[in-house]
Amino acid sequence: MNVLIIGAGAIGLQSARLLAQQGCQVTVLDQAEAGTEASWAGGGIVSPLYPWRYSPAVTALAHWSQDAYPQLAGQLLAETGLDPQLQVTGLYWLDLEDEADALTWAGAHQRPLNKVAMPEVYRDVPVLGEGFASAIFMAGVANIRNPRLLQSLKAALHRLPNVQLVEQCPATGFVRQGSRISGVRTPKGIFEADRTVVAAGAWSSGLLAGLGLTLPVRPMKGQMILFRCAEDFLPRMVMADGRYAIPRRDGHILVGSTLEDVGFDKTPTAEALDSLLASAHSLLPALEQARPVRHWAGLRPGSPEGIPFIGAVPELEGLWLNCGHFRNGLVLAPASCQLLADLLLERPPLVDPQPYQPVAARMAW
Image 1: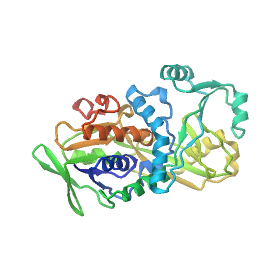
Image 2: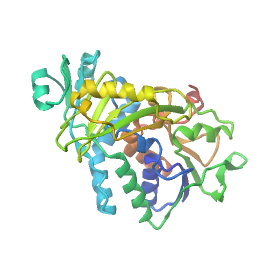
Image 3: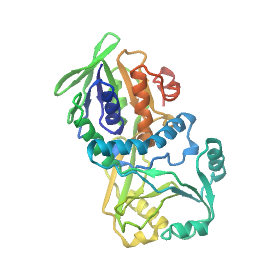
Image 4: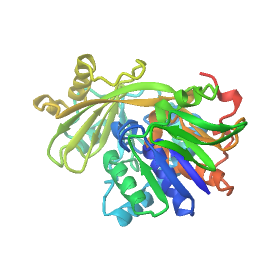
């Protein structure tokens, strides 16, 4: 089978890797450089920020992905020599209004989420700011260094003889023969395929609009800042009032993020920087003595309830979607890409595919 994938973020690259490993001939197109949009810009927490607030559809993919990530990271390291740096730090949620709901959800789903007394939290995270009154902790939550994950995925594809990665090559339209899609047009020519998969993140709806399809996916801007600290500065991820701090192995600390509905504008703003700094100083007061080494923005593919579109578009033979993951593209990537591969190769799916189908009932914001 000849498969064309539009978009080379975490979703597009991992979809290509899985399909190529099953013998498909795969071409991946990206309008810019592979792995430089939302997948690069996020924090890399391998969990929805508030998992108990999501639908069962998101939960099913998240649980499968969380269990799969250690194996995926190990496979990529073995295949490429590039370590995606998955590290299990656990995550503290502080002063939650819906703490009882979170604990009830954890019990129902057998997730290791527990209430922790604040003196124990401060012993575990001595740099945490004062004044927090309550905490819950999930021990198994990991984070992955998303730029390195993308580098390793890209390197893995370069090692597969049946994969072609074409960068700086935007899809400008689809090749359509009646009700069948047989490829795309680009400035570098026509690329034909038996199956065409749209995995273009926030740009997916614009591509599909040319076919008269309305996909409720739109850009939602997020801004983050990065500090450099000692390697042992922050032993756990911490989150309060919608903002989080994530430690990397080498001492970098990410603090994020904003959520802005401003179209395709990725310009970092002074207002967001001030807000992120205030959150950073509240969570970790020692950061008041540090200056951010970087401040950037990315565009999440916002979708209703954060439920991605995965599967065949029924109106157009040969057209498939794997997009609309909102804030959880990296979180859900292993399961989303495995589900796409299962459906495309007509194998039993890893989860019930019905909630993710791109049917007419879901084509509305």
